[in-house]
Image (cartoon, rainbow, N blue to C red):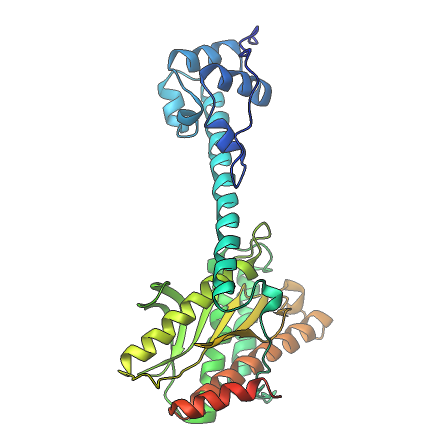
Length: 347
């Protein structure tokens, strides 16, 4: 039996906020407004409407209800699940909208701090790319590892962050091993490394460095088309690099002449951005990321997809190895580090 006419005579007024989501509108509803809304959106019938009215469930309370809570009020199982799922969906959309709004606002503030109003305004630097031998043992091992992961986990498309980090880890470990062989220097890669200092105290996905200093901070992100991973990743990675800089300075008990630079990597595994952080500002290698397509069709030997995977992984690794090798080799004297940073913009 359908509700005869439980609509409130009052028209629904959309509650506009900076994110303007449906959940924020629902939160303003009284009991009758909520019943009217659910009748139109979910076909609420008379009996279910009476339960909502009896329990005095307004919009704010509705968004907190679970299937169990609806069932405890006497709601039929099917209706309880539909309403609970709808409430959850509304809250998740609100969370994503707020995250998008907050990220864009935070990124704007971070960029302005370093003299750039937009991502497009970030200066570019030219990294020293290290050409990797096609027969390099670490490179071939990385490709083999990627093929095994592709075979076991499938194409990387809208995969979750954990799966993407499997591929990121394979590439980073190979790059660190190649750099160690090239330089003979002690380098470590530390997953889930905790950095303390500055505005972004907390764990980073990967920190690469030696005993006394950090060289590179990597942020692995899940692709979020509604936010844009470049915005999310750059925002957090810039602040993480700043914290890593402060960590280096504190560990070395440096004086006012201290100068250092940190490389940042923001990636979803399929797209790779590279940043350079110095106390004077931030810069990136390119407005467009380097891309890798992890697709199952690349498992077919001799296919165009296999050749493209081979080339794109090699291209990304050559940039990373070049950055790490350059940072490991530079002398610790502040004036030398500053000269090295300046050279990136002269090439």
